[in-house]
Image 1 (tube, helix red, strand yellow):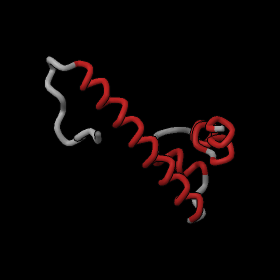
Image 2 (cartoon, helix red, strand yellow):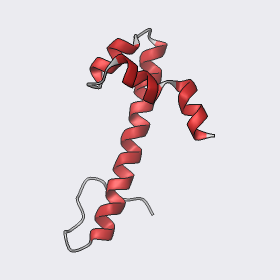
Image 3 (cartoon, helix red, strand yellow):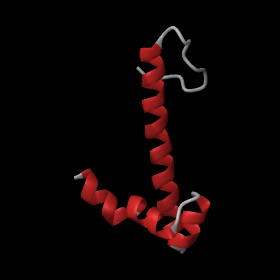
Amino acid sequence: MAMDLTTPPPPDRPADAFAAVVAMRRLAASVERAAVDEALAQGWTWAQIGAALDLSAQAAHKRLAPARRRLFND
């Protein structure tokens, strides 16, 4: 069942709140990876990507480089 991320769960349902947090983290990571891939395809540098994400170029590359993601997702 898909989670509705537009309305926060009530405070008396912490399990639902935690599930919403996990779903939002996964969605954010997916959007971030897609944006990085598109930025790289458009010729952005890691410095530009890092600046857009409030990270150093090195931190952005270490966390988001497509080749590194494949290593951690296999």
